[in-house]
Image (cartoon, rainbow, N blue to C red):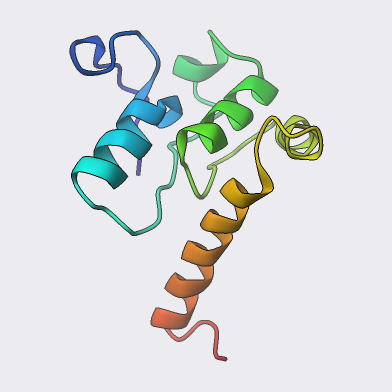
Length: 111
């Protein structure tokens, strides 16, 4: 689970880790080689809602590399962002593939 902590010494800004492509994609997936699911902490938490609209939070989390968004209130905006190309379809397909692999691994989904 990606928390909403900030690590400006690592990322160079105050973006919460749960919304940071530096943290989720570059470091976690890239440098550390993590291939599992990345889940955000609740996007309805004050650490997020004080700074971002629900739509901004959902879009930023997906752009950063999160696979599952916990308690998102901005999915309509995220859907629009996919439709207009702000979030590439391939980015969602990567998450769907990881989710399906996890379900298959734990016997929740069979071929």
